[in-house]
Length: 187
Image (cartoon, rainbow, N blue to C red; front, side):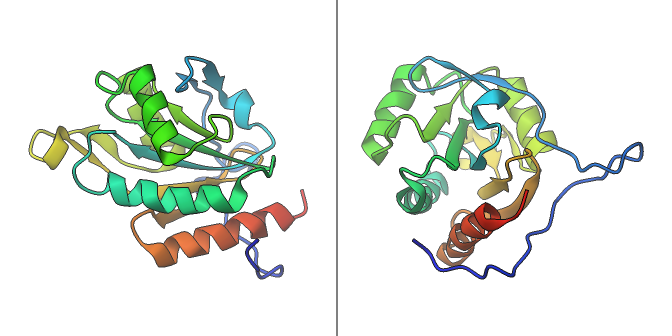
């Protein structure tokens, strides 16, 4: 368990609605996990979660990101308040069996850390509009894709509360601390 500053309050990222002053939330989604099960926003309702975007054949930042996400997973494993959602940005290559094998290699239990695939356009739109992240094909980039290395912290009300560089151990340490600060927040 990580020690945390119980007095710290995390910001809420995104625009407020001009109609009712509520903050933007991650939009509804329908994706498929490494076991072939449909995963929607209902899966994370009322939970704190971390989202990221990757692809299994990534030759650059993804291996570092997954090493860091594994550290996050080890801190939250077994605590039902937390979930991790890793979205592939290469759904044509990253088949369900490949995602399952990838998850298994990382040591995921297949429940708390989900590896998601689905419609390419939906994933890219979810990255940009829901998580304030970048994910798109780019033939000039190694591996053919450009994506942010961000780990996105989302609260139980589906509001983005932080974005952390998933390739920077110090930022991931801060994410781990912020997970527990968010857990201690009053609803």
